[in-house]
Image (tube, rainbow, N blue to C red; front, side, top):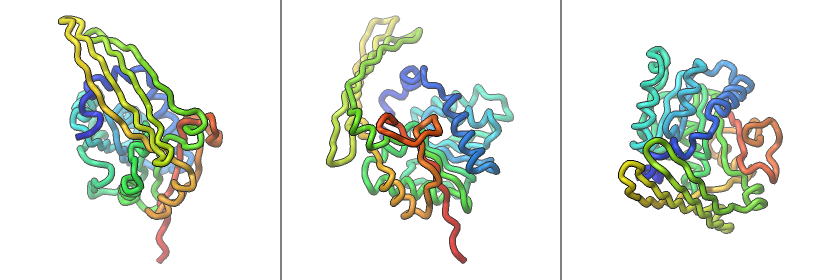
Length: 260
């Protein structure tokens, strides 16, 4: 079961303020710089396909993959809102980013909204990067964001509370983090309180997401282990180098051509 299964129904409410369009345009800008001929994309951990649909609207053919069936149900509904010609360019597949093999290669692989930081162990990270590499065409491009370790340790995670609502429900989401410095992880315990506006009934959901913060030397090591090399590291949504102020980092890597 995916950690997102329990509150997938409220996922788009939680992140309704997230600017998926601007983030997708940032990715497109990186693709134009590092992979200008790219047309086919594989998105690992596509969630409800908010990024994927924006990429399709910009002319890419996208396969979105996620391990949560509830998230994919929402993604399929979002795909149905696209015009027929765009809908045909978005394929949605159930699978685990650590182990799935779809039998095709792509011009680029993307993993957004900290999918790589959800790979909390060394084995998981290596497996997910292997999946990316296995699905890349020769000299294909891998783009991903992640929790940037120096900034996490400098800023330190804090408890956050968000109150949200739509026509049907009021939701309070509490995120309580526990930093595990010796594991390079943060255990984020989510408590979600949902009030049905019509019935006034209450529901309580609890999940813990284990997030791995990453450092560039270990990223470089894992990329090398999987036949890739880093082209650049940036602060997410900018062209600046990552810094102690950059909770989210971003890397562009390329599959290394094999010697004949």
